[in-house]
Length: 338
Image 1 (cartoon, rainbow, N blue to C red):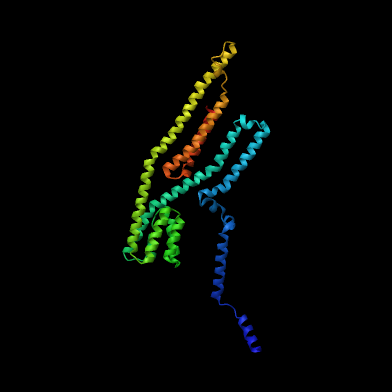
Image 2: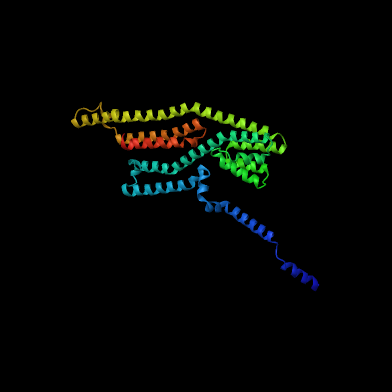
């Protein structure tokens, strides 16, 4: 029994191999980094990346700032001009428009940037698949083919190809690496093509033929998307011109017809003549009608832009850039020119 205890003490005193300690430290660092990339810790680790990885994420910051501006501005207007100013004053309209701009301009900019990134990736994807297929047909393995083409210039796609090459060189299985490649790209076209290639690789078929098929499919997809966008562009232009025509008609009607009617009615009323036939002109409240028309113009501007985005790019959110530009034009027109 005593001999057993001595042997046990000796075993406990034996130090771990140097390689074992290094592996333990590596695993601990990996686990620590994984925890920092999950949940709320991920926001603290890299807030800019979290807010910009998807356009909608920027609303986490822009929406509270816009709401705070609206509340503070409304309280300031009501305290200075009274509660009736919500109905009679255009200051509330100005605050509301500025609130929308604060909240949606970052979203529109990030969505436009993300759309350009996706477009560049989808244009370069067929060339990447063709080059890998050519290398594979020449006798290279898929990892070697990817390593060779990673030195090429594929625009926005190049960084993702280099990351794929690094993962494959670290002995990560090709199927896992290619799936992660598709997820990192984050486009439906990339996910579909990657799924086809991964399943062909698992089935043991001719991967080079599958790569060429994926390249042709990607090329046709990009061509159809480009053709659709070009064909629908005329309707986007029609939507924008319709808004400008609407704004022009309101400006002419307000500055000529309604103003003339109001001035004529006021002149007849001040002369003491019989105003029974002109009472309509004298009773026109021009401020009310200008505010009514400004609301109509701004509502049409915002929703026409969303329609233009849906028609032109297949997403209503892509029309935010049109909406905000037309909304700003309508707001400035009524505040300074109409």
